[in-house]
Length: 169
Image (cartoon, rainbow, N blue to C red; front, side, top):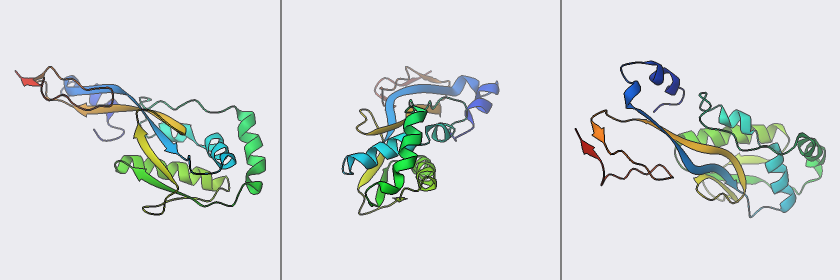
């Protein structure tokens, strides 16, 4: 389902019954384990989780908890003294995930961190994962249209459909 269309689809009596919204046991996260600890702390403290969560304005894509504001301010003061490491992030997933990662990169660059998206030579990766290692940004939700004729619709915790159970009326 296109981003931003969930509310409109739920308000439309014609298609409302076909909308399936499933919170997933997954989070969008940055794996920065190959970076220095001080840089990982800076990325975590300055990640703009609220802007990222606004990708789905229906508040279905809930932001992960942000660090305390005092940590954010403390990290901002130390950014210039951090190791000079260019962070190159590879995005594992679809275009929506890549767009979300670009929002995070823009916020980090605004803070003075040298962060870029990269297809190769990456030293960090951004993906939707079931067990986050690193910087959790948002919990994931799956929203899609499913024909009202479909019965026994089931998805696992990561949004994978169990087609063995699907039947038609």
